[in-house]
Structure formats: C-alpha cells, structure tokens
Amino acid sequence: MKITGIVTTLNEEAHIVDCIRSLKRVCNEVIVTDSFSTDRTVELARQEGAQVYQHEYIGDGPQKNLALPYAHNEWVVSIDADERLSDELVEAIERLDLQRLTCDGFAVRRRNYIGQRWVKCCGWYPDRLVRIFRKDKLQFVGQKQHAFVPTSNVAFLDADLIHYRYRNYDDLFTKRNYSTRGAKILFLQGKKAHAFTPVLHGCAAFLTNYFLRGGFLSGLDGYVLAKAIAHNSFLKYAKLREYCTDPSVRDAEDWTSVW
View (tube, rainbow, N blue to C red):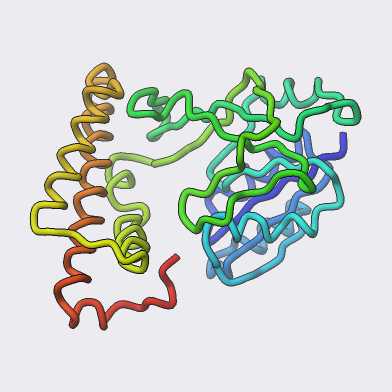
C-alpha cells in the first residue's frame, strides 16, 4: 500500500520513534517536518528511515502543509508525534482500495489520554478529525492555531487514533503555553478584554466542560481537565487585558514568535 505518513516535530525525541514505527505499519514513506529541534528528534527520525526537512515554525496549519509537496504518494496520513495508529485503524486502512475511492479523505475518532487513562469527557471523545486524505484535494486550513482538514467529501472510518496528550496532571497545566499564543492572536486581531472578561471566560469554560460536556461523569480526571481548560481560558484573556493596558508588558514580548 502506497501512503505517505507526515509528522511535524519540535523536540519530540521521546515520541518520534514510536510515532514513525506506527505510521510504517501502513505507510511506505514517512516525512518529518521539523522546526529545528535541539534534541535528538532529527537523528532518531532519520535512523527510522524518515525523510526530514527543517523549516522555522510558521503556525499549525501552514507547518503541516509544508510536507505535502515532498510526498510521492497521492494519499497521506498526517499525525502528531504523540499520536499512534490503533490496531483497528491499521486494519481499516489496509482494507481500503485507494484506487477506487470516490471520497477525498477519511475522518477518524481521536482517543485522548492523560498518562495511560483514556479520558472521554469535555469533548475529548469522540474527537473526530480528518487525518487521511488526498494531498491534491485536501490540506490543512491556513489558520495558525488548532488547524484542521475540512470535512468536504470525506467518509468516516470506524476506528481510533490514539493520542498520548498529557503525561500527568502537571503536564496538563504546564505542557504548552497556549494561553500566551492565544492572547497574542487575539491582540493582533484587534480584540479587547475588560477587567471581568478573564473571569467570565474562565467560569464559562469550567461550567461548559464540567457539566454540559460531562466532566462530572469522569471523576477526578473530569474535574481536573475542566479546571485546566478554564485556567487556560482565564489566562488567555488576562494576558490579552495586560497587552491592551500595559505598554511595558506588550513591548517586552517577542511578537515575531507568536506561533
């Protein structure tokens, strides 16, 4: 089966080997687009037989699309370094007759984990995403945060993509500073925040995820996840407020590395 696997990386030495081996279960080619990692990511990727291309990080969607011109196959499977193909997803892909398909892509469910715990609440499952597609028909949208592949003319595979999203609770709160990135994006879009905006957004995020999205049904994991989402939302708008009202904070930021 001729499919190209695509991965974007930055300092993913802990994940990249298992990621590439997972892709090679169905892919005859793996391409890694690396944002100048300072660890062994590139070395390990090449040892596993992947083609590695390096480019400065230009945002989520644009970065993922950089690999498409290097792919020799029509169909690609795009995953992150901390994601793996489940056994049922491998079997579902192997059953596809790529030459006769009329659709342009496939959506799969993403199974998100904290540690080894599968968390289904707060919109984490089923987290449906298009990750298998024809490179000449579909690609990631150009947005620079939380990019996705459009669902036009796609089918659904009844299988899961495994996502080792966070190692533990500490990782859940500290892994990536999405609040700063989000605040910068909002500021560059001309958005404003008032004194109570952070509190309102934080409270709304907690209530939505804990009650409406079933966090209360998942015990401590559900509560901690809802709190983490609320914390991120609160910080994003608090930082936006700070950028809007304090020129010294705004001027001290590196606005060339928003993404």
